[in-house]
Length: 147
Image 1: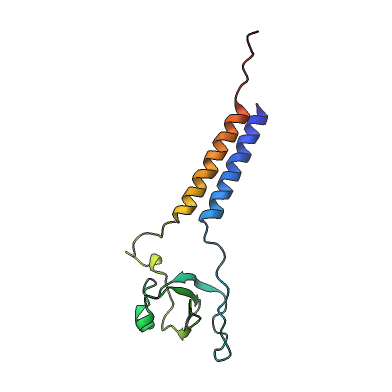
Image 2 (image 1 turned 120 degrees about the vertical axis):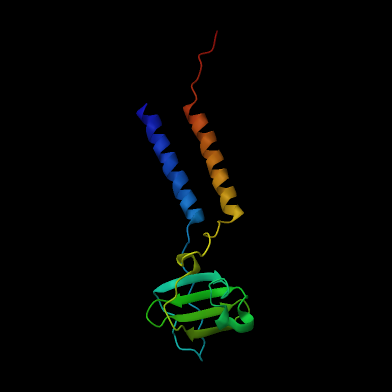
């Protein structure tokens, strides 16, 4: 009986570990290539690091015509945070923000959190199905044959 309990605990641990790996935020993106004309201004620690548009982060006024372009965005911590953006074509911008940045989800009335991708849910479903099948095969009772 203890063996079955131990296997169950291991399966739950593996399932929860796999789910957290699929749904977790992951590591922040690499620091942007500042190029020879830019100072290394976007250094850790970051308030935000990820793929987004300036408009989605509430910084549309800084992006001008590029406000809705998706790119990799880094915003440093501090009294005068630095905003660095690198778009897919390799262009980008660096500017200093007037006040500390608060991600839109941290602001009151900012809506709900982003949803994980359907691929993550599919992977979680697959992991769950495999763990159910493995549990069934491991714990089924063999009936004595009537001979």
